[in-house]
Length: 202
Image 1 (tube, rainbow, N blue to C red):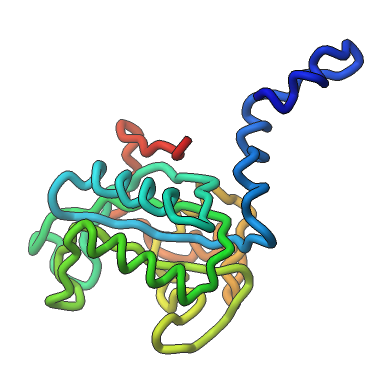
Image 2 (cartoon, one colour; image 1 turned 60 degrees about the vertical axis):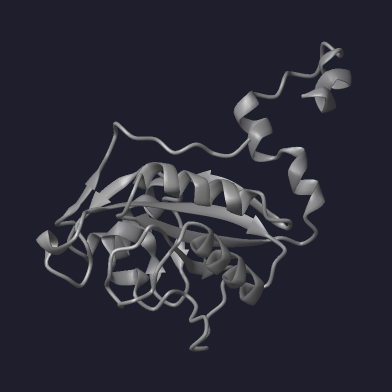
């Protein structure tokens, strides 16, 4: 808060609330022309909450990345398989600012998955962590290596619900308002976990 010491000594200047300071913190000055990106995180093996928090912290530790918002936690039934065939997921969404291009951000996402021993034996198999790029700025691309926005995000309540919690006015490029997309999909098997909390990195 030392950036405000001089201003606060002037009685005509009102102190800036800490919450506002957090949103415009000095770390942003290290990013030149940053882009906004939305990342979905999911885990259904091991200590799910601890793993997701570890992935968030690892992304924050990435040069050129600043995590700006962390959603509430949702518990969801596994996607694409019978609900009783594997453990339920914890899911969350983070919003970040980054100077990394999409390809480099994808490489970092895969590196984080590997660090937490993500195994890709089967498409809908259980996993310690998923780190998916949902959206990057307003980019729309059908590149098979990284399709933007994520090709199934608009139909997944476990992505839309936490994203809507942190960005109620957000839009999914090419699809429209996240809130409207959420209203159009089923929330069956997607439950908020108010007893759990992820931390925004300091």
